[in-house]
Length: 390
Image (tube, rainbow, N blue to C red; front, side):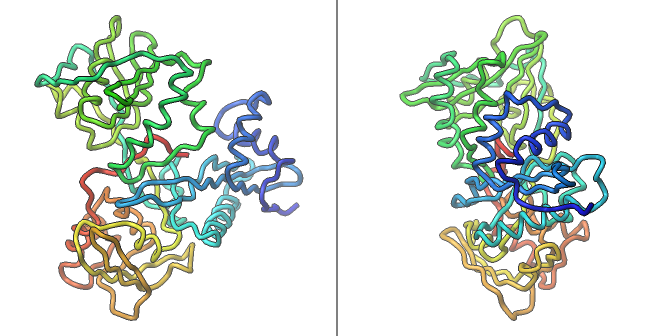
């Protein structure tokens, strides 16, 4: 029987949720169906069906994401699933093709995801646009190298209080970085849950200026989220985490690669860091995506973009941009730089320059100096990062 590809309906939800649970090494529990339905109602799900059974699933959620100088609605891809029984048959390629085509038809200009396996998504035009660090530090070596002062106060709060305040603190803290995704309502119960042994902390200085979520297991403090709007809130919240008694180790996940904590510690070497790819980005509409961010300095670059998976992007584009905005249009001019769509995604958020990609043989410079000019244009003061991805 041939595979049928179509949008998942309410009638298919149990089959799709069960397939996703199996693929991510979990057991389907019908008690979780209401939460699955909340996610389902937010986005566009495409399934691959073998008869009545969903054997492949993809989710596309329209979420807000910060880019340099603004916010763009982004097609966030998640829950990507193909059962082992149907691998190597092109199911994922067909589902991704349909999702990206639908996103383009909807006018969505960017797509983002977090890859469970690194080799998969480059062939669909996604490039690594942001990284993150996982941390571990011996609590005995967490002293600051200087005295940090703060006028606010720290309070441990209830689950209800965290549900009320933390989502707003999250988004108010997002403006300084590109790549931050605004979580939808169903995401927060996974982070703030009575069933989990979580502790919730807020820093108040007038308004709530920072928050942290952590657990303690076997003398280890595990910080799943710590976000602060001010330097004082940041220093105070980490000091709180480092001051918890009866623990030996503090761990944290998904921290920005340019997080200042290393530079605050008396013993910078004590902070053990492991870096992983975080945000995989795809320019669904190249000229509109390049027009939708600001740039560090005024300049004009002509890009030749190769895009086999989304052929509507294949072409030559002139970008005129600067700190106040940008315009990108098709052109007949000779290109300064030639590159593939996945390589253009890498520097888009400001996390990486073009030049290392050229040294890796992935970008071609036609006009001498064009790479350095592009590096200067696309640079941002802070590395892109997001606490939440799909």
